[in-house]
Image (cartoon, rainbow over all chains, first blue to last red; front, side, top):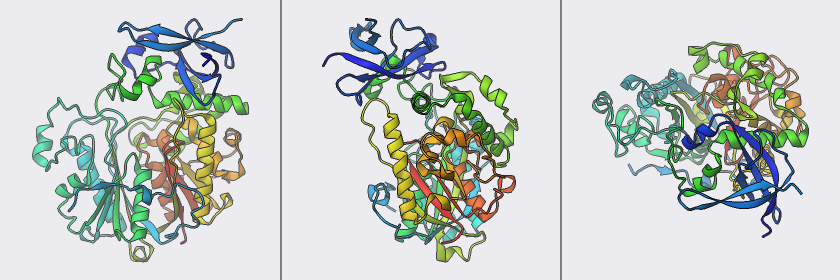
Length: 81
Length: 441
């Protein structure tokens, strides 16, 4: 797998039911299509992308963020070149 | 009596090519029973969903002119909320426990509802020998009861959905929403804050707008009409408690919940019980109300492939529902007098009615239809019930309205053109259950 994908679309969450996400509001949450199979999707908060300024259709590259508990979760960052 | 079973898959019509429904026109809805509504449960026994379920069932029997001993079947939706359950650490209110016979599930009658609880607490139902639990919502119970009556499993069948709303913000304590970690399936969504159905449907609506060149403002006439129709629904929450008209300006100025879904795109959770009485078309002739014949029922069982439903999956599923409904009912889109497809969230109603080809629309044209006369006085009534948006979260208004429209009992909501064939169902764009209702068999 290339670890690359495309931003298919997004939502800006202003009123979350998830307790830990309430302090982050409003926040982007995007749907990423994998380059190898666009029917396989991942969610992303697109680190570094301003709220509601999501370039739909842009290419993204996966990166893995480590949580406080040591778990790694996939995130996606816009490829600028 | 044996414990109540869930509906077997064999009772659903979930594939295309099944032909005309074998019981087309042989099953009818006759009676309707509603409880009052409340925004939340005040923890009094007389406003519990148990008490209101009994009230709604008795109202449905009285409405149909049926005595309790004539009822031999019951289809019940055991889930009474998509939000919070009564906490297992809370004791059951004393007066509730002393008023009713309890079951092994201590939530029964408070935040869930079983056929067993009802039979324990409605001693007048002396001849019920068929019970079934339909998961999810009234749409499931309706298709199940229709098939059960058609199959001869029951002749005179009560159909019940309750909805509870406890104190606190709806759904914020449900499942893993308040946890510090994301167990099970939530591990694939919660870490990115994808935590409610509103987000899924906001995403799908955004996809829809991008594909067809539409925008959220175009939803305003539909939502305003929903709220107007709801104020003409005397059984509904808004008509009873907050008779406030919504303007286009109000809608466009509303705060976002999950952009592009705003406050008025989301329905208001309430406390209620709703019941219907179904029977055979033959038996229905002797009852108090005009029979509303069921021409077909159909279900969708799409398995979403990845983390979130795609627009393509959504459109394929709703297209297929349209084809199945028409095939089994032996009708075409032109035969529909009105539609009452699910609306709770308003931003997916267009998927359902485009799948039906309602009023001649094709994919991407529903929001254009919304800019025309979609009122109950017009040529193409859209959601004359007002749906969940108009009367509160029950997932029942659409069915009640279909029955009332065809019986000519919809009051101020009565559509101007003859109400001959209507369609209702949901909830969401995949996984729902749908029914075609008719004035004639």
